[in-house]
Length: 194
Image (cartoon, rainbow, N blue to C red; front, side, top):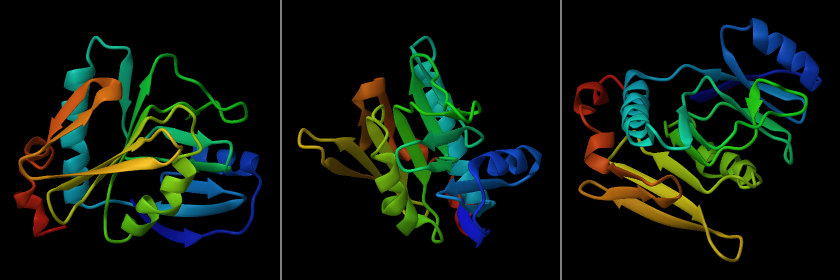
């Protein structure tokens, strides 16, 4: 999702009250609220493909996939946001202040768009690395068949693995395999309209 207009500083409780009444989603970080613009047909298609393949492979396991309606809270950096997809294994943990925000995602997925790619690869990823539960971060490119999987290394750095057409993304922590071709199945129809 693209980031749009910024608002003035507000307390988190005021953000929650406004978010409950809003038809749009907003990110919150240190009192700054940022509106998240809607995605494109291609963006929605790639998310749907991912969701379907994840759901099918997670049935009967202790992990569940959630769509972009689930708010994720990172207390250590004071960020609340809506990843495109989240996988949570085990019991859902809630934020102390925000009962509608999960704090224990195991895997997070972002489908990149031109307006969010730099943020998703940089600052947002930095926030996500403060989640002790996070074991994988997956970035899906909208412009080409390219999926990047980040997993934590032994020395607190994150290991980057690039997957392209013909490859399979293996997310061992949730025992899932995602062929890149399946993630991008049918995407040609939507590429011309974005």
